[in-house]
Image 1 (spheres, helix red, strand yellow):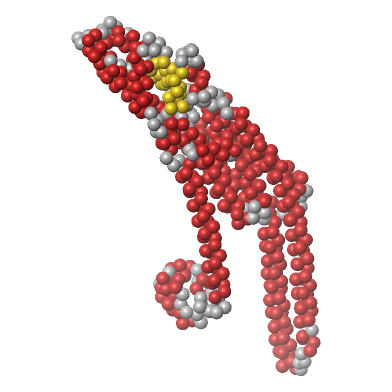
Image 2 (cartoon, one colour):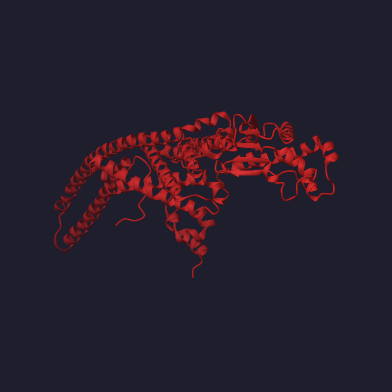
Amino acid sequence: MTNPTSRCNSNYHDTPFPQTTACRFHPTAMAFYPAARHRPHRSIHDPAVRPLRLAVIKAATINLLILQLLFLGLFCYLFGSIFQQTTHIHNLNVVFVDYDGGAIGQAIRAAYQQLQGPGFPTLQEHSPNTYPQPTSIISAVCNIHYWGGLYTSPNASNRLSAALTGGLPATTYNRSDILTLIWNEAHYPTAIDSAIQSTMQSLSTAARIAYTQSNGPQILQTMNRTDPAAISALTNPWSLSSINLQPTTQGSRLIYNTLVVILILIQEFFYLGYLNGLYQQFHLYVAVHAHRIAIVRQLLSLTYTLIGSLCTTGAIWAFRYGWHVSGGQYMLTWMTLWLFAHLNFLVLDMFTIWLPPPVVPMALISWVVLNVTSILLPFELSPGFYRWGYALPAHSVFQIMVDIWSGGCNPQLDYALPVLFAYEVVGLVVSTVGVYRRAHYAVLAQERGSKERLTVTDEGEGQGQGEEKAPEETPGEGAAGDAELQRHKTETETETEGLGGRIKQEMSRLERATTSRQSMGPAFDLPYTD
């Protein structure tokens, strides 16, 4: 077997060009791709190459700066939304109702005074007259008036005092019926776990310490130190009970507001590219009426997004371990994701219609980052500037899905649904107009390409007819004349074939130019064509 290195070196003197760097340092690669080595190249110091070199450096520098500034801006926007989020936890309001009216409520107030700050939820106390029953607190949390609700049970302090004095047996005192937290874990589970559930647990622990400190002398005087139940009540007077409106503990919950949305957007972009490639490959814009193209295009996008949203919802349900959701919630989630996927298809289609092709990828990544940032955290935990994200479809669709998953405990449909349908209606209109725009420019490009082909063909025919007269002017007598005529005929045929090749090459170039003018957006080659 020939050594690639020796083969590379053996051909060194056979070429008029110096040995390339690729040949010196990558002989194996050059053995598989010999054309890259044998093709003549001008020196980078050639005066004719200098303008090209400067133009390349200038274009590369400008585009480098544009992309760096774009991604720097996107990174800053994304990181800014979660910057110092712990200092915004005080924007989360928790209602507190003291149905007990005794020492336990006082202990909770004292503990809150110690924990109160930017990194702790705001505890808003209301009288039992405002919320006469715990069910009214549940309703307030369900209707997102508050992020959580905390209440003490009626007569809780007296029951604890009785347990400490030994007046109640151990089986009678229920330490779980003293302090209760109401919350909805489905509402931003990754944020609410730490911002509400964990902080309220810390408040309960601090309140137990405050209760012991403020009531210590009285407890020691009245406590039955020989009663195990009394000692147990002293060491652990109560435990925080939890009423979770929708437990959401499955691992996949972490990506519902990130990767799921990102993949849906990318999925629509890829299908849009394939659909554009389909119309270009079969020249449908010049062969079919524009209104028929618009109808079929919308039907294809509706069908694709319907199936795609079904698969996405099915994947969410397949990995919902421990998440109690019903079949009706599955259907509602499917329909919501279908609307979201289709409106994003239309938005991306608008990008490809009205934006210059080099800007489309930048618009796509910006659209993805803006939408994902609008649902990374609740707006209460982000700077106020980010509240403009209410106008983005991702924020609306996530709020609708939380409402579905928690059984109606996130009633924001009054703005979320209009936002989604506004994108859908505007997208349908603009996308349909875009079909007529594409068809218009496709017809103009075809007409221009036809004229250029005719011009090239006429020039080739004129040159061919001029060359056919050459044999008549060439005299020849005997065997020498025949040989001369044969030689001249061969040269003429060779020149004619070369001219035909140049004509085909030029027509191919015109075809590619016409196709590029018809592009109007990203177009991917179809992975399968019949």
